[in-house]
Amino acid sequence: MEDKTEFKVEEVEQSATADLGVAEMFKQVLEEQQKISRRLMQVLRENVNFQNQVRGGMQDELDIFREQQRGEQFTPILKAIAAVCVEYRSLLDDENIIGRSRRKLQLLFDELEDILADYDAEVFKSEKGEPRRALLTKIINTIPTANVELHNKVARSRRAGVIRNGRPLYREYVDVYVFDAALVNKSKSEFASNRD
Image (cartoon, rainbow, N blue to C red; front, side, top):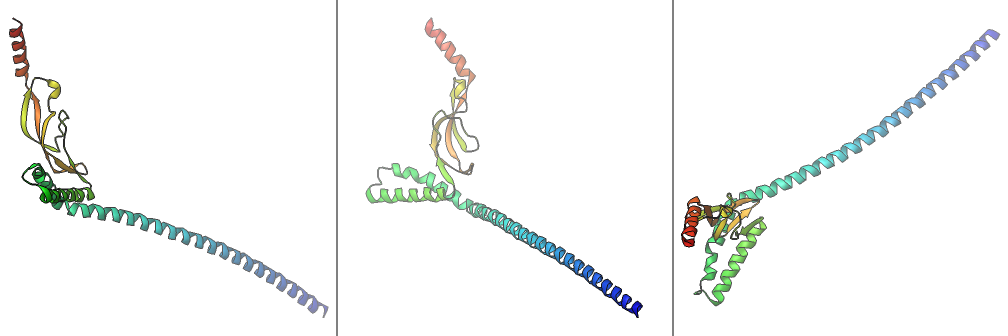
């Protein structure tokens, strides 16, 4: 009987040890599961933050694209407004237009310039002696000069131009100085003959 009792005690001890081993293993599995759950929650938060950043960036890019597209689709209309604004502004110099008509005309041109400004377009006019901007101007007349420093400089602006984002909507009409070596020789011979 003693053998049976010993065997039962050993069984109980082994069973208790096994239960402790299972409990310890269960505790370790539970801890690992909690670590994995915390890591999963962290990864999910990071993923949500990343998605929000991507969406925000994409929305910003979409807004910029829409703004550009909106402006580009109006380019033909803006060119027409620029032409009217520049071509007919000289009507304000007409002394036959007086009083209320002059004020209305002035308001019209101011409104046209405001529309252009709303779309980043501006009216410009070159000053005498400025270098000619080839992409923004159209030469109407060339004026020969003996001064090489004046070559390709604006002699006179005949009509203003309109630019938008560095590109012309309406080119400015200008007269430009052009160096002529024959004039240098002619002025030297005139100077020499005046000295004699």
